[in-house]
Picture (cartoon, rainbow, N blue to C red):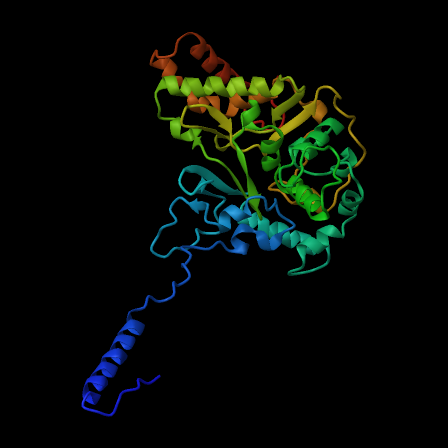
Amino acid sequence: MTLGCPRNRAAEVCGALARIWVLFWALGAMGSPPSPAAPRKAYTFGRSFLGLDKCNACVGTSICKKFFKEEIRFEKWLSPQLMLPPVYRRWYLANYTDDSENWRPVVLSRLIPQPLHEASDRSICSSAGRAHSCSIEAVLRATPRFQDWARSHLLLPRMVQGLATPMMRCPSQRLLDRLVRRYAEVTDAGSVQMKHFAERDKLRLLYTLAVNQHPLLLQMFPGTEGWPFPKYYGSCGRMMVSATARPIRSTYDSALETRADIAYQLLHIAQGLSSNSLRFLLYYTRVSEDMFATFEDGKLFIVDASAIGIIDLLEGVPPDSEPEREDVFSCLSTSCARPPPCSSVRPSQSFSLLCRDLLPKLLTPRDAWAGRLHGDAARLLGSAQTARGRTGTSRTRPAD
């Protein structure tokens, strides 16, 4: 672009104006704001870290968007390296938000420890004659059990026979209907029929049942309905998100009143699980201090429901079947040992396990010797010590 100037004495003035115009144009170009750069993500979740690369041999994908929109963040994420936590950990403390302003603490947990996941994946490949690696989903889809699932619109007791998870030891049709109706990893939940389930949904449900029933118990018996389980937020890959709480082991050095209250809540929960309006008997197959935790208000919850068996009191205990159907799904969990028959479960089983394995850690003989236990608390300790002595080292059949 040029400026036209008359050839006279004003030529010098015109030239000066042209130079000034060029200078202003250059300065304007230099001073214009640069186009905004794409914001750099503070961190990213890897598909392998979450276990998404293993889907549909996974729990689900209902909460994946929260991870990738940074609405779920690890509690100690803002480190100098901005690195993912170690993959070998079973659980991680994190924070969750719905509006980017109000955050609440949650816990991210794997179905089973990562080394066991890897061993489980290898066993799936081995079942198909693959020595090292394979398409895990393809192998599971080809099994007769899953083909049975794929053809059926109802989840029937024969379709879960041989699974090692405790609540599938003696399932009733009513229990399986509740499982399907409450399954939160599909849209349009609420029907006992699986017509709205895609094949991937059926595989995810079957895989979860085979590996760890914990996320399913939280969906079937939610805390919003008075059950002693934390809120289930959803799953992504092989990671699930639930409300966090304080492990009861952290209270062992607390005041006697605190420990006695937890002991009372343990027994109260066991009573509620065994006697409720739904007529499902929920019982412990084992207990440990990692199963229970308290919220900030001191309320006790079951934070690991993997060891809970269920008997339908309306339909009764089914007769022990012939040699059970076993396949690759029968041994994908932390233990491949089959639970004892449901007919062997005693009404006092949960209480006996609590008195033997947990209450003595909360209420010790030292409390009684110090004269600090009175009334009901003293009787509670006496019952715990009696049960502990009566069962001894036995871990298979608690006494009545």
